[in-house]
Length: 171
Picture (cartoon, rainbow, N blue to C red):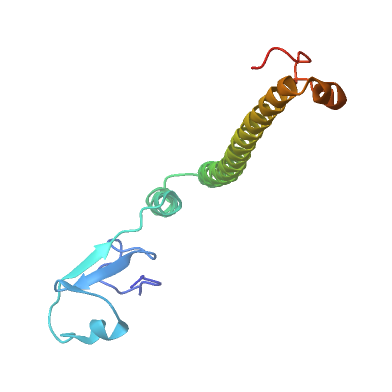
């Protein structure tokens, strides 16, 4: 259950932050809103998961700094600190944008690698088919040459030649 607001008179104010999550009450894991009503008339022990994202940490630091230093700092100094915090938040957003762009490039590269792998498998398969076809043709040519030796007139009519152009040397 995510904490969405904190009342001004809450005894835990300063220990809890908006965005933190209540994970259990008296070691009972929160699974539904009704879990908050169990033993609500007694003292209970809550377990809280603190939201420590950089943005929340910066926001808390900004708020704490503002409260502690309001009296001793000038408006200009506070403004400079606020600007610095905004630059840090912007730097984080820029970093996240670059990370997202790199993830997209990585996904594209992986897809390209997969496509090239498929093309390579297809090319190897086609090469194997052509090699087998070539072997069949060589066998057929050798058979025809043997027949031609038995019948010299047939060889002249068929004008049989090997792929290299030499009728006498079979590979």
